[in-house]
Structure formats: structure tokens, C-alpha cells
Length: 163
Image: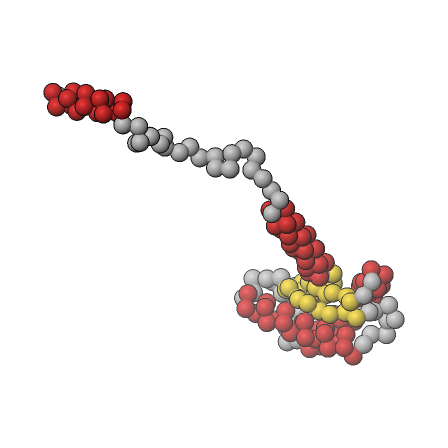
């Protein structure tokens, strides 16, 4: 098992080598505008997964995927010439789903914002389903009516004094 730091450094080096080779161009007309987004190398340095995105339509993406699959041997030999490792890792090109995921997240956020504004708009015309204030309030006693209360207050005071 190799050092994880060494695997990360090799992945960075492979990313640069493949990106430079793609910049110089391949003799494949199917290859579109390809960007290498990431490279992951296994712990034993035997396999490299190269993640890429293609700018364009779905047809251009499938054509670029076929072109990269066809150029895998060329890319591996290019990597083997430019790294200082005993063995050259096998290379696998994997289409990166980050742009599609980002677009999906943007759509979901836009939909949530639209729902929030619709809720905010309906707030002005909304009414309560029950009472306006659903909480129970303490009883309010009428303090102005002194006729019955004076007698009951005196009897309450007398009974309290006896005890």
C-alpha cells in the first residue's frame, strides 16, 4: 500500500499530463471540448480514474466519450513516459456528473424560491382557520360590580381569620 500523499501527487501529475495532451489535440474528430476535472489513483498506484466533462450537447458528449475510450492506450503511454513510477497505472475515463448535478440543484433552488414567493403572496389574503388567537386566556373578573362582591369578600375574610 502506497502513501496516500504519493497517490495524491501522482493523481495531480496524471491530471496535468492528460490535460496537456488533450490541449495539443488528438487526431479524432469526435473529440469535443473536454475538461479534466479530477483524477483518483488507487492506493497501490495501479489504476487511475480520470473524471472529465464535455461542453456541448448529448451527442457531443457521447462522441467525446468514444474518442477518449479509443485514446486510452495513447494516454497511458503518454503518462508512462512522464511519470517516475515503476509501473504505469491503467487509465479509465469517467464522465463527471457535477455539471448535471449542479443544474439539478439550481432548478430545485429556483422552484423552492418560487414556492416561497407564492406563499409570501398568499400571506396577505390568508385568514385564520379558527379563532384569531387560539390560546386560552385567564378569566377576567368584573371589578366594577361591588354589590355582591363586598358580602362575599367579608365572609371569605371571616372564614380565613378563623382558621
